[in-house]
Image (cartoon, rainbow over the protein chains, first blue to last red):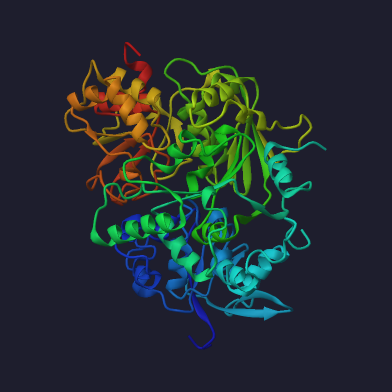
Length: 178
Length: 422
């Protein structure tokens, strides 16, 4: 990889479910996301845990992260050092867990990203996006609500709640400007 | 503009009119975590260094690892039990049942309530006209500390039912039909709201099955109206006072929906989901003669006493085909006890079935009942992803208890209507 800030794109298809991300049988032995990262995607791409490097990117199609609500799925992706997940759409529990876990997720048309493309995270005007260094194309997700943005910026829900001793923005049940 | 059931429940809770897309922070009436999600939640909660805000609104359930398979999991289960004891939280122990059965059965779900669970099939509780959604471990840790969570208010898809199901056709067949029609991601960020004259013909057990499978479309929740069926079920449940039905919420006639699906129940036939997708749905008749090696009856999706009766009635005169392993998974201690009292368990045992303790067991490949390479399972559970039952070189078909029992009896996938006395 010529650009040291870039990571490699690993491209998967539609409906990558959480069982494929990390099999239930692996969770019997440990909950350590770094150890479990060795088994990332093993059922659909055996050996993947040994190929992926910290700073790489996961690229999916539609409905990425469907199935179980288990947060271990987003945790293991972070445990593998994945920089961001780009997909055409995310399942809602996966998206929730990603926001709450501080994982960068971008919902965009991923058709133009090929396996092995060098990708890099870019900050532009306060928004975080991803640039494909091969094609020059930029990818930015749709804006999220002010509350979710705050949670993401705090580094996840636990960090946010520690900081605010609860849902600080929302004494009356309202979340930010929503 | 009127409101859907979900919009009304969330608006009432938020204290303002909530529209789809709004992010609200609201109280949960109850929050549940099991041994799959609970241990991670407890560790995250401990990092908050805050007290448990409402221990009386929290339910912990041991159901994924029943009985415990190894020393590492034993440690996690002990962590959960110690945490529950330390904070005065209700804990259901191994063998009590599967969380999605216990939450309604033990009185933690009522019409109009907001109930969340750190498990995707928490959508089940919408059968009782509650707003119920799956959450993650961070979410659950947040509920422990604050009693609250953030939710993005969803739009709803209206599923309008007409008519009644024919002989040999069950709520599970409808659930599979709906997943096939909407697709595995067609319900993402939506609520599946059931309505129409046909709903009255579906009993509460069928409604649990339908709402359980709702998440297989990607839906955030699935919800049923509160009607006479709901009221009767509440009256018969010793853990709920009869007045609980008064909290029921109805959709307005002019509510706006993101989509609609109409189903004439009388035209449905037995359906199955073929490997390896929940929305790969076809009539059972199209797959007859596919040989099977194992069968699973029960789980949180289809383990009611009525489901057990249907299966026992099919198996009693026929037995189980040679070469087929039948696993029976009663979803709770209460149902297991009732099935024993009715003689249903005797039928299964005498015919050669393996009785699995109440828990998630074979459904998610976490524990027991793993098929061999090339194995073909037909199951009443809710997912058939590749490797779901613990072996990527096996296949899982999903179907109703009648279809699974009929298939176990013949050794191949069988439309239960083809058996003479069903």
